[in-house]
Length: 322
Image (cartoon, rainbow, N blue to C red; front, side, top):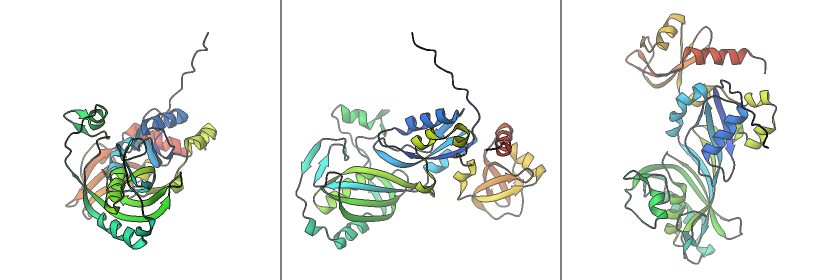
C-alpha cells in the first residue's frame, strides 16, 4: 500500500530567482520544480528557454509576476556552438541530417568569419523554423512539421546587436563555430546558425546553446536547481531577489504617504518630474515598491500596481530574520 503523499504548505513568496536552467528540462518544468522547492503560491517565468538550451532563466514569484512581461522585450545574449558541414531537418542536433558538405578549415579565416558576422549584424530578417511553437491558422508550426508538411512563413524583423564568430570544435571534435550573440526578442539562434553556415558555404546546425544574459541579468547571480535543493529551506528563500530586480532600467520615483495611497488606487499624480517611459514607483514611509508607470507632461501614470496585501507581505518578509 502506497504511503499518503504529503501536501506542500504553500506560502507567499515575492521576488525573482535567477535560475541557471539545466539541459533537457523545459522552462515550465524548471519553474514548477523551483516553485515546489520554495513552496511558493504563485509563479511564472519571463519567456521560455528551449529544453536543449541552458543558462539564465529569471523565475518570478508573487508580485514579481506582474513585471515578467517586461523581460519578454529585453535583449538576450547567447553562447552557441554550431557544427559545420551538416544541415538538419530542425536546424539543431535533434533533427535528421539532410545534407553534408566538406569543410575547408583553411577557408575559415578570422577575416572571413568577421565578414560573415558583419553580414548578420544589425537589423535582419529571419524565416521562423518549421519546428517552432509559432501558430499558423491556430496550429503550431511543429505540428505541421511532424506531419511532414511545410507551410509558408513570413520573414520576421529582428536585430542582432553584437555578433562574434570563431572557429572551434564541437563535443565530438568535429569542425564547428562558436557564436557569441546579443539579439532582440524573437531571434531564433538555430536559424541564425543555419544562415551563417549557408553564408560560409558549408552549412551548419546548432549543437549547444547557453543563454548568458537577459535584460541585464547574467550568469553571475544564478543558482542551479541542484544547488537550490541542497540548501536548507530558509536559505532557499534568501536566493529570491526583490521584485524590482526586474526594473533595473526604470527611473525610480518616490512618493509621500498621501500620493502613494492615491497612486495605489490607480490615480495619476502631478509633479515636476521629466517625461520618462518606464518608472519604478516607491512609497517613502515605509520604503516599498508600489508598482510601475510612466511620466508624461508632469503626470505620473500607473501601469502595473502591487496590491496592499502584496506590499504588506513583502515588508513582513524583510523584517523576518533570515
